[in-house]
Length: 83
Image 1 (tube, helix red, strand yellow):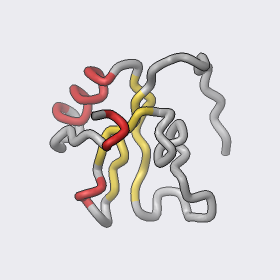
Image 2 (cartoon, one colour):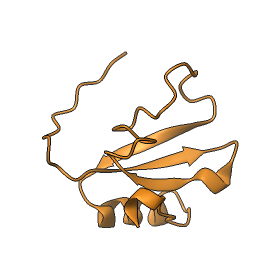
Image 3 (spheres, helix red, strand yellow):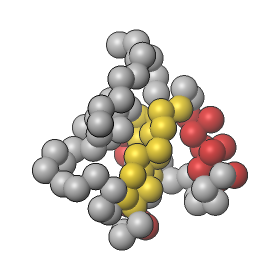
Image 4 (cartoon, one colour):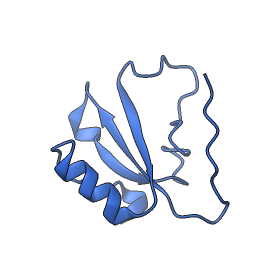
């Protein structure tokens, strides 16, 4: 199933990668990050959800951090693309 999002080319969006096999990889990413790729990830030949999921998009870094802290109860670690 493919979901179409109404995303504008210059819109700053953020995703959180929640990896249940390697928690140290749980990070907030910019949508344009090559690892995030608008929530599709960088590995095309993997079973979606096998290792983790992309949560988002969030329209601001602040909203993503708030969701990660308050809803998911994880520390809001930033990927290098966001630092």
